[in-house]
Image (cartoon, rainbow, N blue to C red; front, side):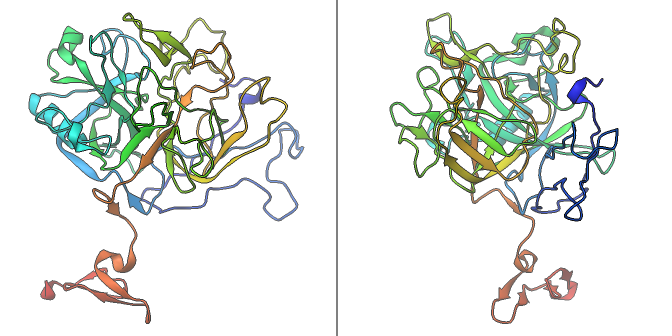
Length: 426
């Protein structure tokens, strides 16, 4: 359906292989004078606009999610009737499903491994981090400050356009699939919650993990670099679909931010802006713990009580699972809206158009003022291990002589870029 400004056309450009890092497309003027876009009455630039954004895994020189979880094939399912869980919750849109044995559960947990950069606090014989927080009385569980990010790749390729997707995942410490519902009695292990919405409920996926670290950006009150889920506020963001500008609730720039901001952000850093069913208000748990952004989340996938409009069935945004690279981070002078409407001084510019929008001002810190966003920023810090280099000098099969520009190929390889295999020399 199309409603008012929502009417329009969508064109998708899909690469069947990795094109590397490309400058994002621009819809602008094609000869310096004549505009590209006209409305249906032939007027240029009147009541018409365009936006460009990326869905799925972007082109890259390095794949930081290159560790395949061997022996693991899973599906992703939304919350719902007779599902795990029965309805969405904060940082839960659904769960990883079809884990068919204890061994497959252990294989996946072991593959996900450490999430916070410290193996000292890993648990179980699988030597991994749940990425979740549970109080000592075990009355609830929440996503922690270091969740897991994985890459889901279809096990079968029906066509050349079947994409892979990143997903935000955290492990339950309290619930197994089988004790959540009898309809999951053939599934094993504790639940892997999906904080990002599933893209498909029928596709079977291989899972690829990373040695990198994902961190929720927060205000580190005790400066221990470890998120206290109960006591420490998070940095939140507002942004518009198609825009490259993010407005944050705190100054996050490493150069100018308070020492309480962790992790700080800098030019070149990678960040994710998942739709993770973030809470819009603070809320108290049964044991009295009051938690930032733990209330006001969606509890249904489709809000049929809304008026019949373009957003009726869009409580979740499916394609928010891509990363952005910071190209600029700075602080502006206050505007007319800064203190009367919402915080807009602290800004981040990223390398490509954001593929969804979150412009509402909310009150996740519970101070009674709806003057910040609700989407929390996740910084991803790549590791030096577990990666795959797509593009490198001499195809990773030789060394480059900087003086002559000629590759000195390793044994068994030849050619200008060491791409020809010489079987006799192997």
